[in-house]
Amino acid sequence: MSESSLRIIVTGLIAQFPLGGMTWDFLQYVLGLHRLGHDVWYVEDTGQFPYHPIEEGLARDPAFNVAYLARAFERFGLEGRWAYRFPWEDRWFGLPEARRAEVVRTADLLINVSGTLERPADYRAARRMAYIDTDPVFTQVKLARGQQDFAKLIDVHDVRFSFGERLPGTAPDTGHEWVPTRQPVVLDEWRPERPHRGRFTTVMTWASYNPVEFEGRAYGQKDVEFQRFLDLPARAAPAVLELAANKGKKRSLPIDLLRHKGWRVVDPLEVAADLDGYRDYLEGSMAEWSVAKHGYVAGRAGWFSGRSACYLAAGRPVVVQDTGFQDVLPAGEGLLAFATIDEAAAAIGDVTARYEVHARAARAVAEEWFDARKILVRLVERAMAAG
Image: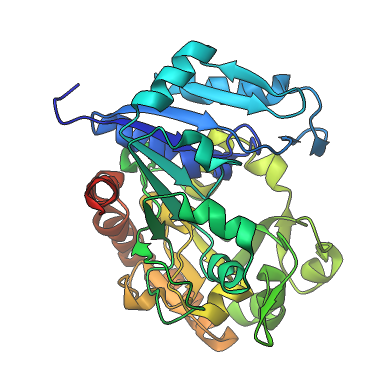
């Protein structure tokens, strides 16, 4: 380990939601920082009961979730570098208590990804604390509405990053500085040479939570935006459009309607349940097509999906709904944005007609704009330099 290495804690939801895409989102922070030579530790202390994907409900016994977390870290040579608190019994797994306390006490930086810590003030022994806002617009609306408990969690941190790279000015002002960042991708874990199945796909949740309102404006979920594109399969034919979609917490997924309109619908728990399944599903796709949450589209903060970044790294062209990201990322080849059904159909047609050009460009976009080595170096430098 180099003299310039730091002791860094990363937070996340790997045990709470033991699903492939969620795992990659958080693990690429840990793995990327580890490969940069930092002394990295993962602490999951959400205060929320974990989800059991097989039983499709809350897990009162954490054995499945803990084993999943342990396997993920062992796979990358990170065994013994994690700690998980099961709130049902207020019980810790992984690092022994004394070692965990020592890691927190001596940490140079804690990166609270997605604000997953239940009580970030308990970790204030860390020299610096950084908050990663992965849900821009919704985060700023909650703060602007005066949700004091949430504001206290945000304000504990020394520096605040956001996937809303066009903030401020595109969402409600919160009085905070939001430093632009994006999902880091460990590029050599994604394999462009793999064959594909000739389908445009995505992995999505229909509706994660209810719309939020501020000053008479509603900010909704993907189900709101998807209504505008229900007839896309007929418009984009002969391209095949497939959704690995679950219903989410709030509204039922209209599978019969989607299939009637020509969408292929598959269960993400069957095709993309874990690290390998998720990666195989993305790499086996011809390209991605997806809408964004209505709040991201309405808020125009420049949010871009970590999932789409992984498609790009796998050399799969990405056709996604514009959230303002065209102001910060190079759209045109490999990465294509749309606002209307006509634009979506045209982009799908162009990817199909010039596939090899778009596939090479997709990987090039990932290498230039999502390489974990570049993103995490900038993030750590900014976090440690903040006043």
